[in-house]
Structures are given as structure tokens and as C-alpha cells.
Length: 313
Image 1 (cartoon, helix red, strand yellow):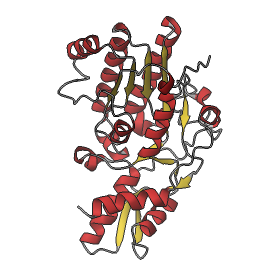
Image 2 (spheres, helix red, strand yellow):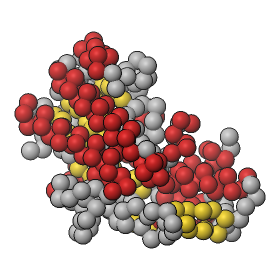
Image 3 (tube, one colour):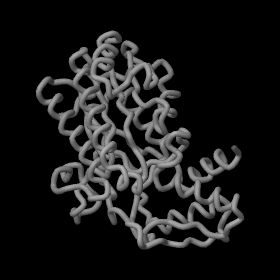
Image 4 (cartoon, helix red, strand yellow):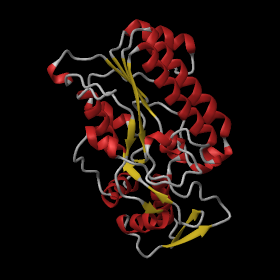
């Protein structure tokens, strides 16, 4: 059942916690919600049960927006499977449990489209298909940790009648902290490769796979704006979030070369490396029921913005 509550501007000001506020999405969202609590990992260690329990009970939040996650590139997921499961399953489980036990009535978890089944053959992927098969093997640890959080959130919502929901965004890109630059998602990694190639006076970039997989990408600032709308208008549903654009890796790479003023660079594909899931574009009809006529930032514009930021450092 979908419940709409009054916008925050018409009701009391909520006491909001944002985890992962220094991350790619959190850095944008914290500017949109300047009164929200944005603790560092030293103040709120999401892997420390006692710390989380104490912090949540001390503050009595009205709303928790859980952005914090252990995230990284496809290659890093393959090489380091254990932390992608352990850290995500622990922080999600602990925070959700002690949010409820400290009286939090509103909770928004952030998942990922990689949680959907790999063997699916109906596109775009509807939310109802979530448990129709296993995720792609290369992202299995991260995907199952995130999928498990969906199960936990639904359990709390159904058992205790609380406003606990989740959003499932497509792949994201944006400004990232230095700690994450070495294991960024594809678009960020692509921009870093172009910048480095220019520095080395090379005339090519090398990408994994063969360039054929299809992906939806969304600028992190757009996702932050959508979360802000979600919170302010009291939306109480779980759904996919993505623009309708679905491009091949090669098309995105060519777009990036143009945006970064590097159209003369060639692209070399290393097909000894995995492609990952071939296609995973998601259905956004549920999103459009609540967030109407949202205009996403064009990929070329977003890439140019990020390129100019990093190349000027």
C-alpha cells in the first residue's frame, strides 16, 4: 500500500540522519538537506553494533536515509568478494535493526540494479522480478547483500507497520572522494582513464570486455534530488530510479571522448576481461507515478562537468 504524508514544509521539521553523507550521492544530498545529521564514520561506525545502538538511541531520529555502502568497480568486486558481502550485510542489518528499536518510523535504504537476476529476459526489468533468479556471478557478493536488505526492509514494514522502503538506482557517476577514486564505477573510471591518457600523451584508452553491454547511468546529483523529493513529499513506496536512456559501453565511451575533448583517441577493448551482465535496464513506471516529469542531466553534460573538475586539480 502506498501512503503519502504531508510535505515536510507543511509539517514539523523532521530530524533526519544521512549515512554515507561524504559519498558520491551523500555529498549532493547533504546540501539539499542542510539540517540533517551527517556523522563521520568515527562518530557512527556502522560495523560496530554497540556504537550504532548507542548513537541511534541518543538521537531519536524521525527519518534515516541509508546511503553508506562498500562499493566499487566490477573488477574490484571480482577481486575482493568478501568485504563486499561482509561489510554491506553488517551495516545494513545493524542500522535497520537499531533504527527500529530506537523508534525511527521512516527509513529509506538504497540498493542497486545489480540485485536483479542475471537470467532475466524481459526488459526493462520490473520490481516484481527481484527474486526470480540469482544476480550476475561477478557481482554476487554485493548484490546478495543489497538484495537481503530489501528483504529486511520489507519484513520490518510488514511486521511493524513502519514506513520502511528502498530505492533501486541504476549505475551512478559523479564526484567521488579520493578514497574511492581507485575503485570507481565505469563512467568515473572512464573519465580518469581519459585524463591519464592525456597526461601520458597517449592516443588511446583501454576498456574491459568488448563494449557491447547495455547500461543506464544517472548523475549522482539527480539521484540526490529524487531522494529529496521522496522525503519532502512523504512517498512511501519502493521502486526503481533511472533515466530511460540505455546505451552500450562503446556508445558511452564515444560520448565521453567527445565531452572530454578527446575525440581523436581510439578505444582498445581487452576482451580477455569480463563484460559483466549484458543488459539490466529497469522499468521506471512506478517512479513516474510519484515523481512526474523529472528531467535527468544529459550524459555528455554530466561527463563534461566531472572531467573539468578532475582535470583542473
